[in-house]
Structures are given as C-alpha cells and as structure tokens.
Image (cartoon, rainbow, N blue to C red; front, side, top):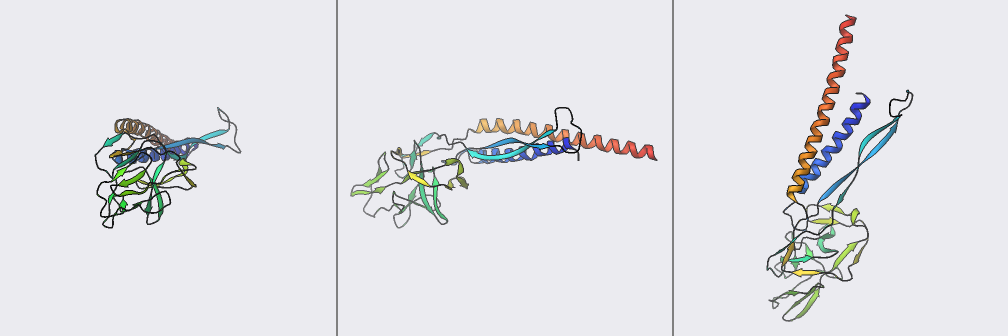
Length: 246
C-alpha cells in the first residue's frame, strides 16, 4: 500500500466513525433529554524520512479522530400534564442513584416505585440536594414541584430536587441514551429552572441528521472509489512489469 492509499484509508476509518455517531443520534431522536453527539477530526502530520521532498513538501496529513463531544443545547418541551414529569429549562442535570453510582440525566420522565420513591423508568431513584432518594408518603396524593425544585404535597414540603452541573460538561461519559457519568466534580446549580408536567425532548433534528448522513455516505463512497482505483492501478502496473519480464 502506498502513501496515498494510507491517507485515504485514514479518512475512511474516520468517516465510518462519523456515520456511527450520526446513526446513534437518529436512533435516539425520540429519547427524552438525549443530546446529539458530534465528532471532531484533525490532521495527524507525519514527516517523510529518507526521500526527496514531493510536491507540497515532506509533510503528510492523515485524518485523525480527535474527539467526540455532545451538543448541550436544550431540546423542546412537551407538556404531558403528568405531575412527575419534570423538565429543566436552564443549566444543570438531575441526579439519579443508579446501581453503579450517581448518574446525571436530563430525561425527566419519573414515576413512583411501590415504596413511594420517585424514580425513572429504569428504577433509578431521583436524588435530592443531599444526595438521598426522594420519597412520598401514601398520604401524599397531590404532588407539586416548584420552579426551584422544591417538592411538596398537601401535607407539606417533601424535599428539594438536586440539580447539579459538572465542572467540565465535555468530559461526561454517556451510558446509554439517558444517563451520563460525570468524570469531573459536580456543584449545585444556584438557581435551577424546573417545569412540572413537561418533558424535555431530544435536541436531535432528524432531518438535519439524515442530510448529514447522506453527505457523509457520499464522501465515504468517493474515498472508497479512490482506494479501489489506486489498487487497480497498482495491480495493472505489476501485471505489465511481469508480462515484460516473461
């Protein structure tokens, strides 16, 4: 394989990664609180040794998959009327107690477990400002949630939802479509903004993602054709040399 083919192959690998990310975005376009992912590519420069400088210089630029990040813009709100559906309209994340430890989420579709614990669809308890699960008693039948996250019933205040933000949101590690692990310290949001009876939808725009996927597919096909054409050219050259020798 020559240098041109190596460079093209590096682009193919990066483009395949981009297609996988786009496919995941489209698959989660209906997942509440999901944030679209984006890939960041850069040039990986290699300096040729032991050869005369080709046109353009000695440096070869390969494509490098540098990072994957999330777009943190809020999604649209869908009003459901369910008192335990809650959405964050400002900064921050809910904290839930997953089996592997506290996890962050923007998916605010909650319900009650048999013991009165407020939890998400996977049974992960919604945590309060002190990191403890929020529970309601059997006598609490009318649940209200204020804009600052205070949970109350007709019998008084129950607790306050803990809304936190990580020191570096770009270093959060996704775990499925709804949860994320904060790999940096978190701090409480000073003035959370919560809407009761609503769910934040994914910020993915399916039409835009499909357009990006079609563009990416054309680029992948173009580079694939280049690699195949280069392979055919080399094989044709080898066959001609062998024919002359025989």
